[in-house]
Length: 80
Image (cartoon, rainbow, N blue to C red; front, side):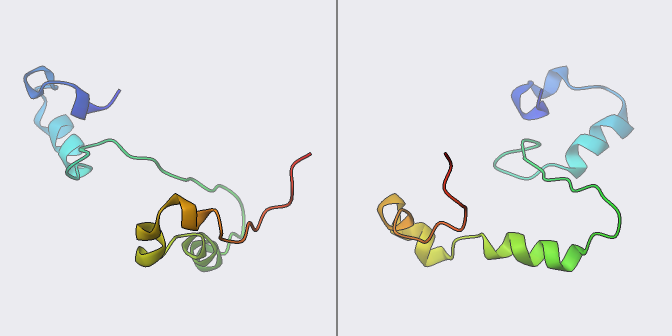
């Protein structure tokens, strides 16, 4: 459940709890978000961040739309 989907009148009354909700709040989505969590030993955070950043589309690629996205190289092996 996301607090964004709950009328504020029904939020917890405890000030610390409300503060914890608002600490994570970002408009326009409130507390709705997705997170990736990597757990392991000796993980190279900067290398992982760079690899994930390399997956992102540029602003121009994003604006070009799906027809353009389908022309981009697929870095994953074929599924059988």
